[in-house]
Length: 130
Image (cartoon, rainbow, N blue to C red):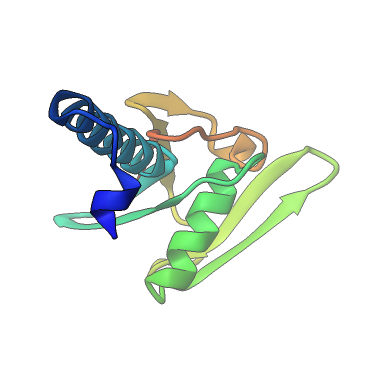
């Protein structure tokens, strides 16, 4: 069957086709990996890492919520409409408004605005509970 399919194609042409198919597979697999972002939750000496696919319009809060669901981590938050601010009421075992710092690609971001800050493929969000 394959001999009929590739009849009239020289060995060198066949090699080029195989190499192109391999490179195409690498590009496709690389594009799937590049659509992921990472969230790191640091609580004292403990660290949990989550990685997932990014969807269009996803924010830091969306990534935190998805990671909390995946890791069975208690998370309670609200968005204060009057101040246009995210209010974290509980994260992990800390309650009563824990002190949290958020970093996006090693840059400190405003914790009150995590519902507005978009994330992109290959971003890393670090959440530090103090």
